[in-house]
Length: 198
Image (tube, rainbow, N blue to C red):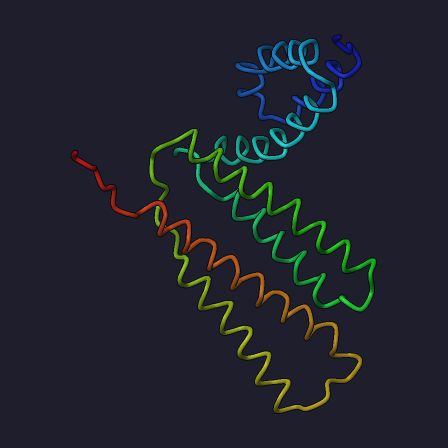
């Protein structure tokens, strides 16, 4: 059975899309959502709708500011958030609350990264411009190496420098992971297509 308040809430959430996209597709999206509420359980429709909104709203805003086909930026951002959650969970592993929060962020953001990447692949077969993934990777590795060398030279880090050192280390891990993810996306996007002839 259709829930008018749920359809109203969804229609309100559509306002987060860019105006041009909303004007062209908003009415149809609201009608489809209302129809799905009639045909399926509300929890399933909302779960699918929230994931779609989380992926497509940032993507549509990026596309509105760029004159090119969809790119994997949203997927990379979610992947970096996932890695950050994992690092947070590992660093704060002695505290079950921090560990649980970090792992939850890693799992949810990782799932959104995979969904966003698949969504980008489904929307456009065009290849994105080659990202300087290796520069990002080398930058992250350089930050990690520099931080490790400084800690080994200085020895024990004072309480005042501990937080900046940890933030620098976290930034190095996230930058390295982002470079790796961009490199994997680059390899997948540029792999040769093999046609089988049987």
